[in-house]
Image 1 (tube, one colour):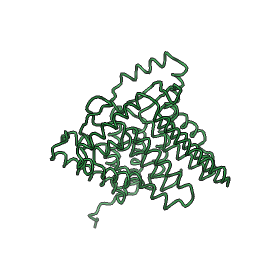
Image 2 (tube, rainbow, N blue to C red):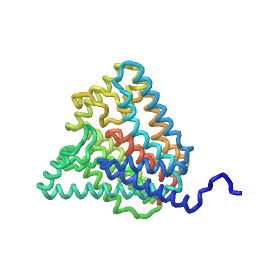
Image 3 (cartoon, rainbow, N blue to C red):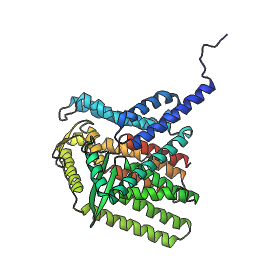
Image 4 (tube, rainbow, N blue to C red):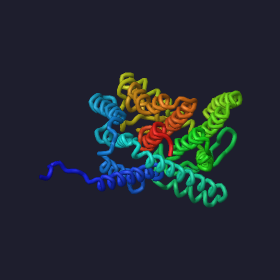
Length: 401
């Protein structure tokens, strides 16, 4: 008799897992490289990947996903019932879509390790090459620069995100050319990965990649990216000296870097700049919004998809670059702390228990550095942020290529 239970032939299962890995690779490449999301490739690859890969997820890791959506649902329901927010059902649904990408964390498994690490590394290197190439073209050709500025300014952007921004920025006392691609923060986890790999294995396998990523982060022209690149590289040399048992020199360098970082942050943050002025006005507007309703501020926010008046934009908006404050505004202070602790800081717990050497602090520095950059851009909650979290969680737990 033929058993009524259908069995999947091992050959078909192998093909399905290979298709799943290919789709995950395409999804990561689309998130990090296709910043404008031309042809909606991000959504298409996500849907296809989940459809094919549902049987292969590690659903013991679904807590993060469930926590986020519980917070989201709690906030949405209360804000749709209780007056005081302009949230509508359609906006609530629309703004929940970005959270769906957190589901990819259930595929932090050994079977997907190579796919995740290789795809993320490749995509970040491509972004770096693109930024450096555009920067060099604009530096040596004024006509090309004018054309590119005019071209990208016509592309559809909103107030907080853009495809490519080419501008002259004053950093400290110098005017520098900045070429900022919309997914540039994806380079930070990869720079940290390469530096930690070099320390852990005592090999310079990724030396050229480290130089490229550092250059691209500096050429992006944003203060957060520049500070992060400089500090990660400096801490690398500090840890390298520790490995060489040059303890006095290493501690001197790390102390010097920490002091330099504080001074640099102070100078960057006190420099008069249009973008900083806008962020300062955003911050003041958030503070005004928070004190207007302490219940919402503490417990459930105003809802993702609601708007508030920001003096930075001189209009109502539902999103700013200050992701940490926007997270508090959307969901409330207590839920925002839960998101940071149970979702974003979870890899720290993993690495503390796994890594016994001082190198664990470098892992922590990398994660905090990305969070710092993401909190000054809208890259904390959404496809770009969750993809970075998947990459960092994978190599924190499962090691390197």
